[in-house]
Image (tube, rainbow, N blue to C red; front, side, top):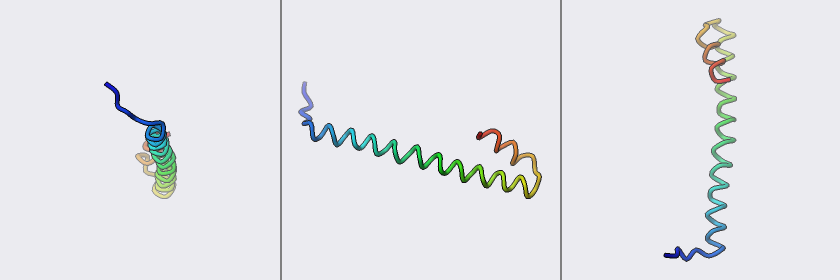
Length: 59
């Protein structure tokens, strides 16, 4: 049983996977960096150890 996919269709599927991973991982790492900056800022302002613990957990 053949799917009948042409080279163009296979290339488009490969491009879709590549773009999906390219969007997901950089966006996650940028978001995590912002989140960690906020946690450290809150810890410096309040000296509440929960913020420091959360920061260390995500590092």
